Image (cartoon, rainbow, N blue to C red; front, side):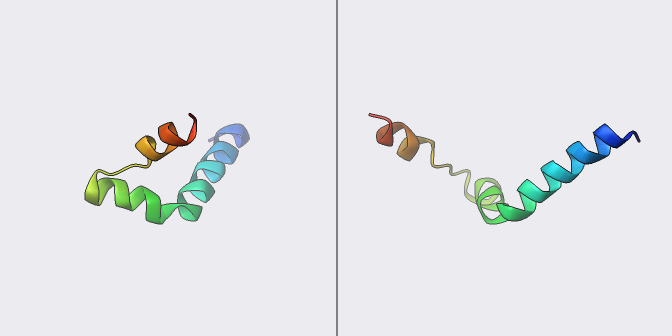
Length: 42
């Protein structure tokens, strides 16, 4: 694996680790905060 690909994987891994609660919540409840975000943009 080249360095650029490995660095990208580390960034993705760190992001998932930081937000794992929200990521798992989507798969468990199929819920997102998209509606809330849309309402806040108005």
